[in-house]
Length: 571
Ligand code: LR7
Ligand code: MN
Image (tube, rainbow, N blue to C red):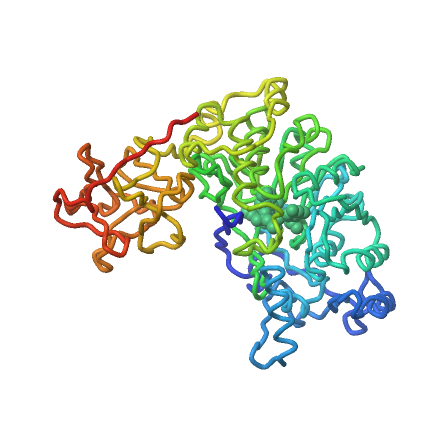
């Protein structure tokens, strides 16, 4: 969608506050709590760090480093809260600034140790002992202006909850952040931990090329990618590595549970979702586990295949990742690389799976906080068109119709097409038949273009229509399509990429609705040769109001009911 945010997964197991003994073995008893010594970072180090960097110059937020008792704020994945009205003006200001900068509540994160523990959240039937010959990993974490405590918690969760011999290194790739504390203070902090490398992009690259820079520096035989705001559960790593060890052509993702972006409560995630995507917008979505996949599972501990991966968190053998063409370096900032690697791996002989015994929490947020350098929609479109051009074959037309064939400048995809040839990949039709038969093919478009009123130079316009239920109105035709691009589909909907025209009796206006209201009669229309647009349920005609909003009325030949359908030619 327009915000460039991944869909939030259904989190069926609820918060992690469930007593651990109901979900498998109790966590390892915590030793040495009273003196709060911590076993990784000694308390003295902690203090010198604060002395050195907790100063105005770096505006470095305070962080709690030590291991905490089980009832400390946020422990065991519990949420924390802040009574905003009780804060001083200055603190309220800080709270607001932190919220705005991250689109999650960094202020609450400050109350939680960066080494908080998470319970063993995996299913009781999951193994807790693993084969000896697993390969070591280079964990690659890219970030752009990540919050201090959140980034630290990500790193500590990897170090604290992975067997040391399986972590060759953690590569932090700074994608041209401009926050001072991510410079010298981060280097100082990380120099006290083992195995951390920090590399920095010379300009803003976006997460796709930033990851590839990380790969260039990686020395371990297996790569594990993580976002910079995650927390790994106990035993998260070994199940992933086990599957990669068994077959190097597998990409394996964990269950991704939700860390609440306001209170930092960590959910357990759901082992009944797969990654999918929709043909019309080529965006990643979560879907429910189809019966054909359920049937193949003998135990809740069995991994299962997924048509796509969310993209942020997965393990892959390094040489395999490189052989298969890494990522498309022409993609910018964010988006589509996850669907691209998913199609590529499946179509070119590999497989993708989700391992229910590996859980990683991720902060899901409702908008993207950072600067995208160029307008977001142009970047998302460029990445998506590159994906469509290389991997979708004839199916790309559905997406192109949706965007009115306005492909924009998507650069050169010759190399990626050659890659597809040299890897001797299957067709997209093969992918549908063999990997994702549940895919929904959108209804055909019977008309794509502007809907105008003759002589009035005014077009049906979807501007300002973001939410379900908003009134639709008309605006001066601008010829740029965009918000004035409409499709009339085989199933009789008049739609834009984000919604459908419908009639609301309650509002007695034509409104914009969710197109998924299957079978809802108020969404269906017909476009007549004489210029009428008939609302099928009521047999009334689309009519322009004096104020440019729209209505339906008994059909007549008055000009406000006569429309012109100006179709675009796909080029
Ligand atoms: O320009 C940028 N440079 C970066 O280094 C933009 C982002 N980043 C970093 C950022 O700091 C973060 O660590 O890239 C990572 C992903 O960006 P987010 O967290 O803002 O986006 P997201 O969580 O919505 O991203 C999901 O989709 C992306 C599509 O490009 C990537 O595949 C992300 O890795 C992916 N995240 C996950 O799969 C985690 C689970 C979320 C879901 C679904
Ligand atoms: Mn993320």
